[in-house]
Image (cartoon, rainbow, N blue to C red; front, side, top):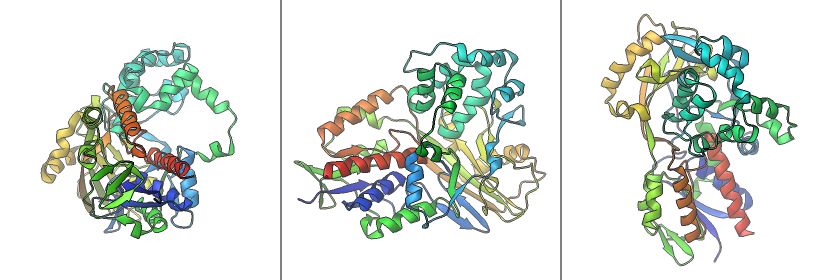
Length: 447
């Protein structure tokens, strides 16, 4: 039988996997339960504004992402963030302060107390932790102090995970930070040592710049779909995978390999043959719920939007998690004198807020936005709300059991790959890297 691959889900992971299979000449088919490509990625143009209804940007944080975009060059225009986006704002006592970017600014900022500033100076001399299940809160307090947790790390985690630093485990949620301490013994010392290490040509390409595409992230999805071929993607698919000896059956087609990119809660219905006990350790994965609000002004009369955006610490007791200044980050997202903002509500600490009806939610957040953005009136020309029930996977102490369960199920079911954000990271770059690695495994098995 000719080997071919079924890919469940047309998000960035599935599309990346399919891209490399097509490039190598391996047959595949993507099965998508919705009526559109791209998973949660979707760009909308309306009334002079260009906004996202899902992820707003990514980071060029690995070579897999860089190389995929090199292959797609000419099919879309990659756009990296404006220089102003290097500045991140943190709210404290209803005032915005720039998040420190170095040792000197860390000592001079009003965000942290004097005691913790002295602790910062001593950070390179502290011992490494030895608890693989240490939460982010525990790690930061041990190395840097409470005020660093409250006014740097907590809002940072809200911006990435919409999560709780008391739940997320550093080893799984921030693996690079965990490895930095384990390998070098210090964040500051490790960062300095790494900066002095010789870089390969590939390393130099990994700029860690924020990216999108001219016209929005959907342009990247469209470029992938164009290369893959729409005829290889089945939309509105009623997916159930059946197993027969060494092969898999999806919608009456036989496949030698199956790649799943759907979320953890869908595994039992997608794969009824999987071992139920192992499945429990995967399906109990916690997800943050988030409401995303795109807000557009044709004429901006608020604060200077000369930053990536503003993050709001839990200590400030606001309903908002943060605000992205999208028209400052990327070009042509709003009319010339206008502004496009994206704000987020909900998350692990306030999941119920993301379940409120539109009118109630807006009644709650409008006064906060008006105050924080210093607007005399709040009359946007565009306001759109998008609800994400399974927005962001949360990597807590249960991650070890989940990863072990995935490994066992993959061993029991040869050539079945349980992927997606339930493992290997939540960012766009993480998803592209995972899709690339899955393709490499499948290609190797076909050689």
